Length: 139
Image (cartoon, rainbow, N blue to C red; front, side, top):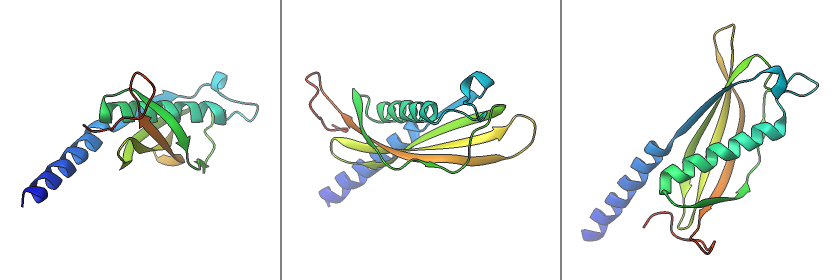
């Protein structure tokens, strides 16, 4: 019985932290943000995705955190100049010292209704101590 209560409490804590750590960052895409195809540079998008993953993971565990890997990043739609972009980060897996954050990128035209999911990727981050050694994401 005690183990069930402890497990439920831990699961509830994790669920609460996942909900509280969701991160949304918006940006307008201007011509200076784009390549010769008038679409946002892929490397700039990946940089912002990693930054959102970092913010999400930090909010989740409130510890120093580093990115250790990223899974396949799917570029389904280009991001043209003149669009609004929203990056949404959400914890999708919690391990002992690491967690995975999925970052979805949505585009919205400035001049018409509708939002489309353009890009999606998952980042794995690890909590570290002052010696750069992995530590539990939840104490």
